[in-house]
Length: 75
Image (tube, rainbow, N blue to C red; front, top):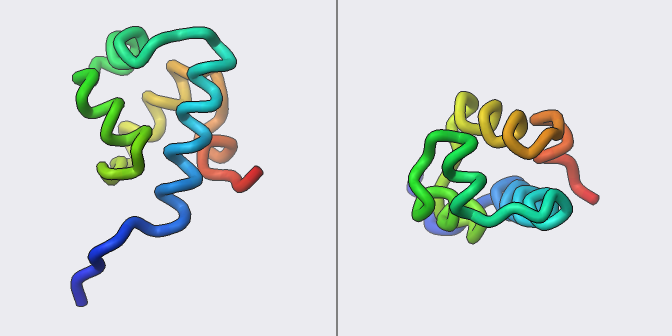
C-alpha cells in the first residue's frame, strides 16, 4: 500500500524542528551546517515533505539542543 500523504507524526516533527530552531535564533543555513545536511533538506524536513531517518533525527536533536523524543512529542 502506497501512502500519498505525510503522517501526523511527520507534521509534528516538522513543527517542533522549526519552533526549536526559532527558539535558538538560528537560520536553516545554520541548522544545516550543524547537522551536515544541505539547507534544502532542512527546508523539506521543516515543511514535512521529507521523511527523516533515525540518524538524522539524532543529529537534528543534537544540533537543536533537545532530545529526539521531544522533537516528535505533540505539544
